[in-house]
Image 1 (tube, helix red, strand yellow):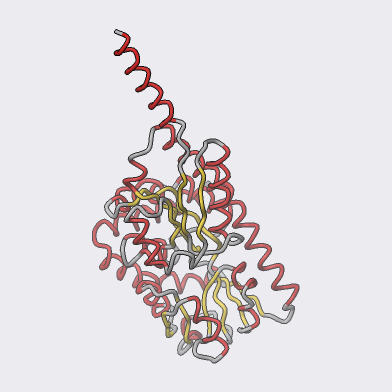
Image 2 (tube, helix red, strand yellow):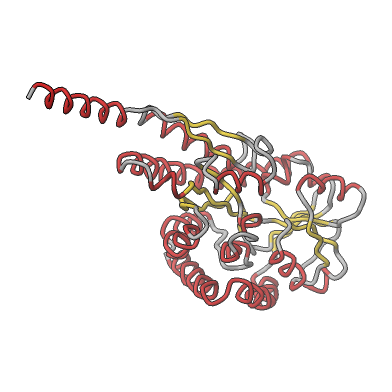
Length: 335
């Protein structure tokens, strides 16, 4: 009897120890700590460490190799969390390129909040798709509205003819700027500034905060708000790691995710405003254009060719996602 009680006591003690065990988790991303991905990661880390004994080590851009290297480590379970944009994950998950499609996401801040918090495509349809690749999708969030900087102004596809526009290395982004009338060139971020200085490219797209932070307004003459896209990124966990967690730790992660998402949705809007304000202050002669509804309508019509290219890559499931994203956009605007 004494032996049985002792054994039960040991088991209980071990169970208690395991439940209180402090784990160290690794989190990789594509940006620095003061950039949107870093701000989200920092808030996520704060929530995890405030509400548990676990700790999170954040690895900024380049710390664990290139984007493809970090994703391989995440899928292998060497990294527990990873933040990576669809521009890079599209090669692995073709359906994720839906976030690169023009004119299927809102740009108004209130509409953006509803779209990413409540949209069915973002919050339901992608979960099983990421799971197929060993990833638990935690959240998708925008880092800011994509704005096009060029040497010459444009308001029509004809104006873009012959302009060499740099895009991330994504086939769908190349299709987008071809449809818009430009001559796109896929290029890594590290090559962009040199390419602008040497006229290898005539322009590029990025949120205003990035344009200001890296002086891209000083390397071009015009910034155009086309209203065509958000720069979007996704936070994921290794699926096996996540499945092996206790219910308590799963809830911990989901709660931290919700707090970090609310935080970055507000901060991204502020950063956009700050970036634009600084450009106006430091570069008062810089031209800032916004396409009218009628001008945007021409680009929206041309986007149908990009949607078709996406469907050919992503198949029937991609077509359903695109359809739902359009419904979510209508719902966000209706509110």
